[in-house]
Length: 334
Image (cartoon, rainbow, N blue to C red; front, top):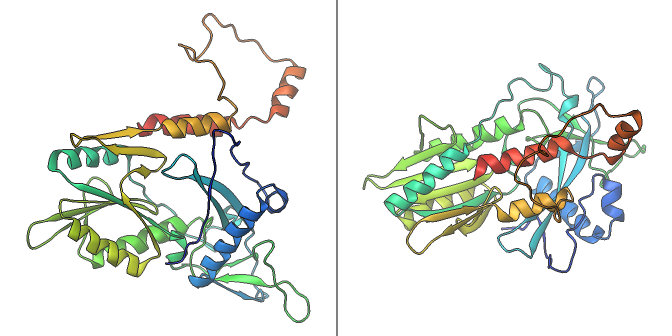
């Protein structure tokens, strides 16, 4: 199995968290340019190996969908291990309804379902394992005829010097319908293996064998949890998934959707988002902030900002919506 990511050990005690670039130019000129280049090379290799697209001339009656590089750093199960990831995505906002896409809804599991699965694992002594699908969306068929810009830094031209385009043969991250296409691909595979969806969550499937042994598959897009008393049954399904998709076998459940999971000696599970909290505090420059007992100062009287104060706020460019979204995720998870 090929590794399509660039993993690096970083000691956060003595090293600042690497800055995540927002553009290709920032990536190739950053101090971590070597890591970002390796991550982009890995993404291009994945697109090629999955036969996701073909480079060709743009048909005269078609317009291209714009694309861009998106970068992120993922923290692993160990505090000092991070993964540099680069993803080439389509700018889905440029798609036209009825032309480039139709239906786009794709469900995700709820955190209440994850917590209930943990409780079921405690009550029934289930083993919990996790897997990750590498480039999940790239496995799903495309449902429209779409051409996308070539990835910046990896462009090619025809004999006349005209820049070519990428004709999609499968879904690409960023397209409005890619999540839906992937969900249908994964669920169709599970159904072909005898799994059935439960009534209360469209992202939880169960399989019951002739020996009345049960296996539960819960997934959040490309992150999968498998639960069963029978580890042989789990291993068989893991093998079947690995034969169909490029998978990352992550062993027993420890790190899932930004949460730490730890099985205690008495069989219970503990969920913790301590590392996630540390990450968002670093991201929003609040690591050294002082805690308060109320969300706002008592007796605070709000006044309309002056033009100068308003301009100062704009210049700060604080990502307010991202901060609120991070807090909502923290609240919903644990």
